[in-house]
Length: 221
Image 1 (cartoon, helix red, strand yellow):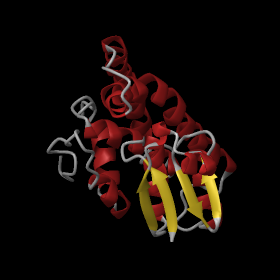
Image 2: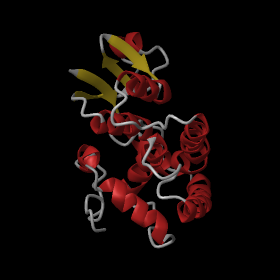
Image 3: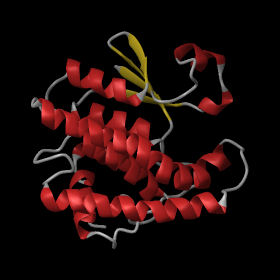
């Protein structure tokens, strides 16, 4: 069985979990307090970051290459289109959420509100929280534009781009930091992806000291 060293609210870990679940790959989840720099964990990944996945006898790190490996070795159901241009768009959007969205939104909201407390780094910086709350509006509007022209974020089929976005949004939704009233299109998109069997373990997450809102695991939120 695969083994994933993860943190429940990490969007990068959640992206890998969604990919594994969509491919019906059984995985043992091991919660890793990576900030404690445990020597055993550092041997698995000297960068002291999660996710780390053990699969096929290989220990691998970084969510992007992990998801690409899963796709290349378990191509069904496909999360990357065969057409090079369409594949480029998927990769562009994965990068958008894992880089731009992460730095402008997730790190300013989730990391300030949750990670600082978990890792003993003090209290949230209100300036960062305000910046994240402002930036997410821009991203919601951009996603609305995409979904006005497409069935899914990258095209007519669900792809890794949708999982990358949903991983971030589900983590933020756990702490009630998404205004679902801003965009009906984005809310409908999230309801579709939230209803997939691959999402069940994500919606079952419980983080000590941070209870989720009532709507978090409600498919008709």
